[in-house]
Image (cartoon, rainbow, N blue to C red; front, side):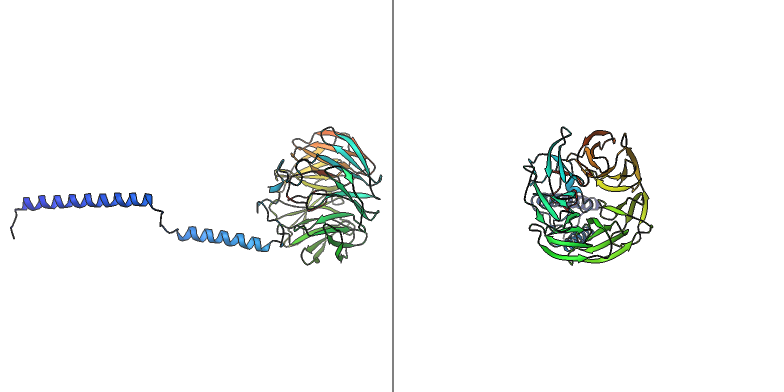
Amino acid sequence: MARHSPARRRAVRLRVAGALLLVCAAASACAASDEQTRPARTKPSRTSSASASASAAASKAAAARLLPGMPPPLDPHDLYAADRPGKLSPAVKGLPPRVYVPNTLSNTVSVIDPKTYKVIRTLRVGSQPQHVVPSWDLKTLWVNNDLGNSLTPIDPATGKTGRPVDVHDPYNLYFTPDGKYAVVMASADRALVFRDAHTMRVVKSVPVSCYGVNHADFSPDGRYFIVSCEFSGELLKVDTARMKVIGQQRLPLVGAMPQDVKISPDGRTWYIADMMADGVWVLNGDAFTRPRLLPTGQGAHGLYVSRDSRSMYITNRGEGTISVLSLATGKLVGRWRLPGGGSPDMGGVSADGKVLWLSGRYNSEVYAIATRDGRLLARIPVGGGPHGLAVFPQPGRYSLGHTGVFR
């Protein structure tokens, strides 16, 4: 083998090293080009895989917990996500906006045009109508004729009444989240009566030991609902599927008189208005432990959530005011006083979220209140003893009953 000088050997090594660098660069370029044209085969990291798996498992577990047949929440963090301004279901699009006011002392329903603030029709119904309740499928409005032992249907498309249905002691009316059953709050009969949601045939009557069942709301998964008993100052927790009372407690105040019930958007907190405690009880529904009282005003009665899920309007019937609660902080952020006084009771929020409609229980009138600043827009004369008025249509996929609890 020929031998070369040190200088020659160094030159050869430099050329070889340069060639190797060129080969490596070409290989890298080819590899990069190849990677751009072929689907990436990089495996996801253990962290991202675990996170995706956990999220999928959580979603599956949440779906498994839902009451079978109920529509899943649009947003697990906001039960009222379907109630945004103008977000009307196809079932109610095109229906004329109206405010339906049951007058318990006049045995009538006043129908108000919200654009003109005028009563455009007065419907004769049964004895002592208490609430006007939208059906689960949003097709019918049911007038609860408490002493008349009947439900009068109203067609929201025509505004006309249909043939009354025999239902005993229908003080208030709710629907299970799966749409299968109507739940009649039979206050005088001391029972929760589960009926077929369409035919109103009795499926099961559940006797209760408390007095005056009247208002309710359902858990996020629909598995249970909480009921207020106004005459004995108690709360019930009811298993929806089993149609069985699974919890009962007396409120920690002598003479308590609980009224409307409403759950927070995140599903963690329940609010129960109490007209004798002059405030709302704040309850953990899952644990069903002792609630605490949040004072709001005299005669706290109705509870209504704003269209953006940020506020809750609390009617203080005994002093003619409406308290505004921040649902994010759980603190009161305002109080609106009706000029000249009044008795704000039950009602609902307009489809666009701009007006809060309330009955004036002891003043034979209805109030239209601007939700932006609490300004009174109109005071409308109606029949005697106006009570559970319904604003219809409202946004939402289905109705849980009362004067319009939509999800």
